[in-house]
Image (cartoon, rainbow, N blue to C red; front, side):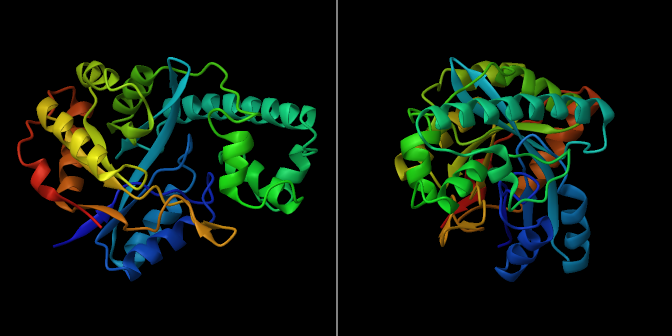
Length: 298
């Protein structure tokens, strides 16, 4: 069997490894493919594609778009998007501007709480271009360097995660808009880690808007949740995907999980490619019947 990890992040967003390193690691682990799905940016895709060609491993060009529904963060993955599409790039730039404002708001709140962190502190160990993203893990890194927290988990639990003292969520696009943007960029939209939200009713709504798949297998899902979302996906005829959500290592801990810890058979890549092609041509979504047989999590 050949397997792929369909959800990884690189240093183009809040991962710690360059895109080529994610691809190298996936190849070293014996995976047939890996997706690069950075937050609100496609800046790492070209490097990953070059590494894939060099190593003989399939690289799926992707993105993870940040949206809000009911005041809650909802992430939509896009696979096989045209990462050179000018309109799509402009839209991602708008999302990064919202993310930048959120970062500033969180830093202001942290300072009010006595956690004296500036954007210069956050950027001190980073080398970022305008088309890359800065997120909460980077703020957490600065907090750890200055001794305010001992780990990434502590930073999110106490301050940066949902319910944390400095958590803020400014207005963003809705999930249906992200689905539309991904389709208009020739891609296949997939709802990321649905078990992290309390909005299952959103899944059939997005399916009516063109959602192609559901990430049933994710490193933060329990076995019960994986079964639950697999069943939902089967009922709606959605492609069932799997991904580790690998962000690299921080403070000696891999976040969220190692590459390959959640994986799908290579057939799923073909289904996503087909779905992207159908959307791009304006045709109907493909009929899917055997996706549930094509997944394995480890």
